[in-house]
Length: 233
Length: 270
Image (cartoon, rainbow over all chains, first blue to last red; front, side, top):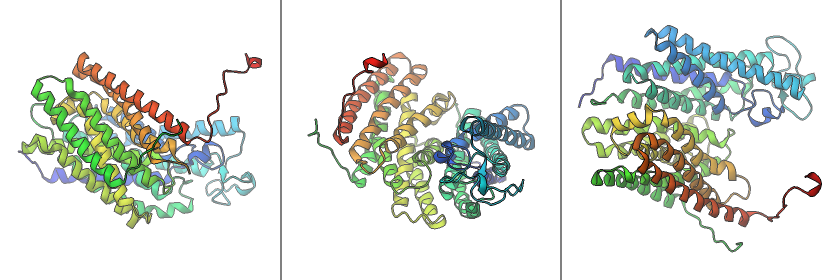
């Protein structure tokens, strides 16, 4: 039996844990509206956290993997992962806004703040009675982009050490995705399924998910770094 | 038809069936394959997965009935996501120690520990205060991992780390197991939840989707195992799906207030 445990193993573990934490914090930025948002009765993207995490995580992984086939340098890989994830999230939010605007026909408004912190537009007059906002207003859009940035960097940072250990893109991608799913479900439980972005009062709960994700990330990192290629593959 | 008798299992019973069924099933699959020198018995792996599905679907049913705020699939995805890593972790560790047969046990134990720790984190750190969170997540994580491992064994026909990586991970079939298996585990409660949710109806739904997953896994194994073992998996999977589909249909009509035939479209619409 050959167990190689050196400083590199610790670095890999650290990368996986930091990546996990970035994903976990990133989820708090994404305006997840859930089913009410799909009916234009709440602010945010009309789907669940896990679906969004899968979408942006997969796109981030694809673009990071593409860059990794060209270079071993971690910085361009992280940057590509972030850009891929951000493009996916922005495209989703933009298309969602088109539908809210042209098909549903509602103004974008946040029910959690009186003034949009970025544009300073008043929000309450535009919130339809009986709903908690509609569409994806500017502040949510910006917040979602930041969330995708963190998620993309996090996903790429998990993928990179997996690839360094196994050298197997398929296995690394599945591991990264598995860890990504765990780290997106934990914070989405923390925010109870819906959040508007960094201006939402629920955002202040992020340290709780941070602690939980830290411990879960360490457990996952132990597994991931201990899996090493066996001879004869 | 309205006299159809249901069943109820306690979580302890289902945990016992799940652990014994999945572990024994996986060993039986690999053992028979090695003894006969063929891959024909790979379909037993998917039957072993059904035991894990019963166990896991019940765990998800118990926790999600508390209402977590997110959809039911989130918990299934947490457990299956972790299972993808844990399933090969045990096999790899066992392979390196030279005790390949112990991989299943290592996987089971690590998955259970992970589930327990996440359950404690949810209750103590994120303040969920759900009394069965630790127990339920331990069950859920372990069951999902065993199900993934059992389906992987159906595709590769062997329990060695290298075979599973080559046949299941490198081919990308794990993504299919991830979604189909996740469906078998979280879909039952997602589809049946509500004030009149009944354990037998939910679990039979899980078995039905487990049969469908078996057909999907069988189609995948056409590539890795060849025609004969794959067809066996597909045919047995179809039989399981059909049997539980009829059973589920009868349970649905039992629980429905009334079943009314509406006929085809009214003549004015044609």
